[in-house]
View (cartoon, helix red, strand yellow):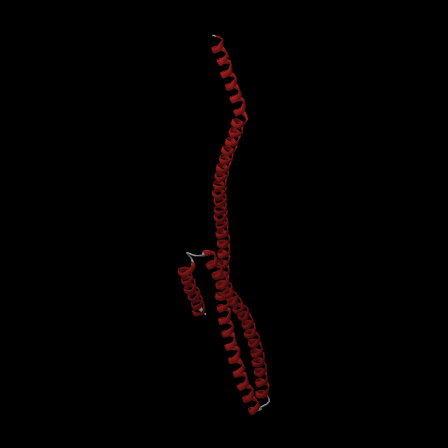
Length: 214
């Protein structure tokens, strides 16, 4: 029985370490999920063994009781045959008694061995369930950290792109304002050009008049 658990343990351990070497750096959550599935399968196998051992223990008990009842019956029959002087029947009854008695003793020993093995199986099964529960909790912890890491990554991504986008929009706004200012200045210059020329012409005419009068 111990060899069975040793093989199961070694198999799981070997597979797990191989998976860790190959995939842990890439996706530790996937490795843990796969290991959990394997462990759940192995734990279920042990649960089936525990149930079978329970049934086997009960079967040994039933066979022991049946054999002991037949041994008691044959012993009484042997006593009756001896008192009646029936030597042949006495010998047959004693032979049957011996066989049933030995069978009952053998079933008693087998039942005791089955009980000891069942205790060991149940202890191993409980240990495997505890380890499985710990792995489920570990997965929850990893999922929590993974969620936080993903959230930080998304927030950083949003912040980086938002900053870049905001900067680009700021540049576009500056460019738009520069263009608008240029257009306004150009329109103002065109609109005031005629009046400036007219003002210059008037000044020149007044100056000419003044010069002529002198």
